[in-house]
Amino acid sequence: FGELTASLNQAFGLLQENVDRERQIVADVSHEIRAPLTVMQGEASLALRRKRTVEEYERCLQVFSSESAYLSAMVNKLLLVAQLDNASGLLNLEDVNLSDFLNELSPSFKTLCEEHLLTFKFEAETAIKVRGDRLKLRELLFNLIDNAAKYNRPEGEVSLSLKTDKKLVRIDVSDKGIGIKPEDLGRIFERFYRVDKAASREDSGAGLGLTICKRIVDLHKGRIEVKSTLGKGSTFSVFLPAPE
Ligand code: ADP
Image (cartoon, rainbow, N blue to C red; front, side, top):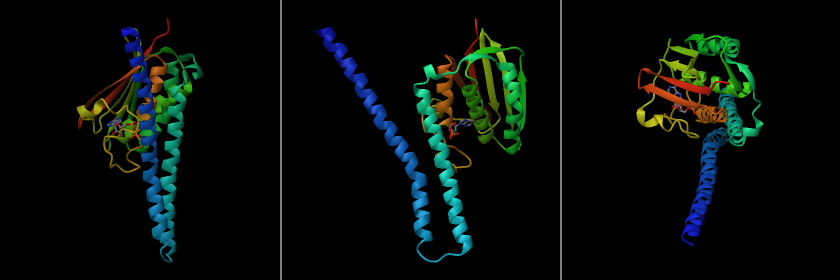
């Protein structure tokens, strides 16, 4: 009976944890969706209070356009998070020559960095292979490079490197940007976690990018680590198993 009670308690505990987790997800998502909706509602009711000039209506529509773009990007990311939650069977695994793959992607990464007036550096050992899902790996790399570019400094630098490290494949994305405080490091992979909650839509996203990265790496049976010094920059390292 003692054993039975212990296992039942454990099972109920787990169930309760799941219920709490789902409740928390619904609360988080509602909270995140409410903010842009409130902005749009406020803008609309203000604009409708009296007749406005064309410029005022234009400004109002611009707010609508950027808030709805943000909402739609967030919903797309949320769908991806949900999809990745039960995606182990959905991964489209194939042999990927990661060296060639990164070489193909690097011009796009360079453009992304140049849009932020940053230098992009890339070095890769040749013929490194992994078992992976190309689309998901692409999503992972774009999120990491996008962050390295967003949280950088004017005329800063982003670098991407690929090598083998103790029988694992290692991808490093480094920046010389703003860095992350030690107390935030453990939380940045959480859903909706942003270090600077007050940052504008352009400067920061919905806090889902790294959640997506972590899930993609987990699904590939790898791990992701971050090292960062505030004010100096960060390095995100992805370790993936090398094929036998
Ligand atoms: P977001 O969409 O806000 O960029 P992420 O999940 O990708 O969300 O990142 C979570 C938070 O971690 C970001 O809001 C930012 O505060 C911090 N962060 C992520 N990458 C970096 C980086 N390279 N340098 C500094 N801070 C970063």
